[in-house]
Image (cartoon, rainbow, N blue to C red; front, side, top):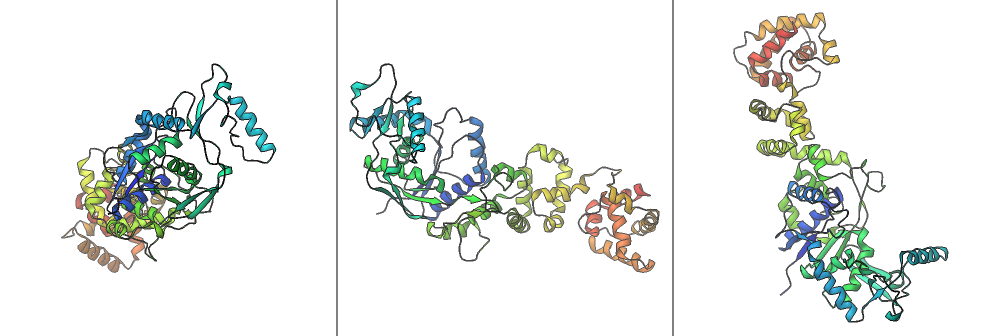
Amino acid sequence: MTNPIVTRFAPSPTGFLHIGGARTALFNWLYAKAKGGRMLLRIEDTDRRRSSEEAVEAILAGLKWLELDWDGEPVFQHAHQARHREIAEALLAEGMAYKCYCSSEELTEMREKARAEGRPPVYDGRWRDRDPGDAPPDVDPVIRFKSPREGETVIDDAVQGPVRVANSELDDLILLRSDGTPTYMLSVVVDDHDMGITHVIRGDDHLTNAARQLQLFVALDWQTPQFSHVPLIHGSDGAKLSKRHGALGVEAYRDMGYLPAALRNYLVRLGWSHGDDEIFSTEELIKWFDLDAIGRAPARFDFAKLESLNSHYINTSPDETLIAAIRALPDQLLNQHGLVGDTENWQKLTRALPVLKPRARTLIDIIEGARFLFATRPLTMDAKADKILSDQSVEVLRELLAELETSAAWDVPSLERDVRGFIEANDIKMGAVAQPLRAALTGGTTSPGIFDVLALLGRDEALERIRDRL
């Protein structure tokens, strides 16, 4: 019987959940779900100076918004320092680690000399086999691991294939600092073992770490997890991902009006593929996801593709899902459109969704498209709308108003019939009526279809807005 699959997402709480971290979480989540396993969440907060509670909250909020759940309670690495120290002391007692008394000045001199001689600037092992009796007084040592010096370390990577690292390129890493605190490298190995992690799925910038960690697993005679190092995400121009490319926190994508399902669908295709398929349900992703379909080349982030995918999800999502997603936007953003605590405006937005969805690429587009519904009379005209409402156009509106005031029904088919009848009777073009009418009703020159605008505003509001312009 094989052991159950256990993956982990292990962010450092030094900032928001960025888009690369979100994809890593998604891959771990999908693999665990696909294999009937579990995904654990570990907050790697060994760097106490840079870690913050705000970052922890941002990471948890980002995962929840993306609808990526984890099994059990989050594990905080810092809470297990005593266990990490115990393992370092055990390695020291068994002769697989040693105390190093080098000063910071010695280490700097060592690195500079190595660079000058064209060698990797790594620790030279000068205290590896030295008599502890030579230790200088009043110096707190670090504890270093006795890394193998000969041969190579081979990482059997599920994505990259066999990765070989010459042991001569890896120095004796520090396990405990001089103040007795464990290093990240030691803590990761101990936690992965203690948490029963079977698969480590992460960015390929951790490949060098994997070689060091593999050496520790072997020295401790622990089962090594299956490593899978995923290529990083690059910008659309092939350069390293930056804020201008989209290296933003997950909450920024929420605030820009993207749906979590759309972002998940987009992220999974940054490195993974299933034939030529582009759009997947969550059930399909869980059914089809596997590590052998992850490519080795860096993926490129493209906002245009994300917007196109988001548009698809907006148009295929139930209205109640969209309203819930809009309600989840920050109050500050919603307040700009009069949607905080205003039941009537929410009702207007809900009624308008079928008309607004086809034109929208983001949730913000939906809100902006509904702006005319929330406006109060008299409307403020933008420059283009003001220009359209010339004397001639106003006269057309005056005559149209008389026609609309007698409309028997106020629905799209009836309004379209009445307006088109007016156009034919007066031998004018649709644009000569629709554009000034749109300006008078919305204060701008872009909106949903003019008959939809009339119907959504309702008889009284629409007629009063026209009268305002006369």
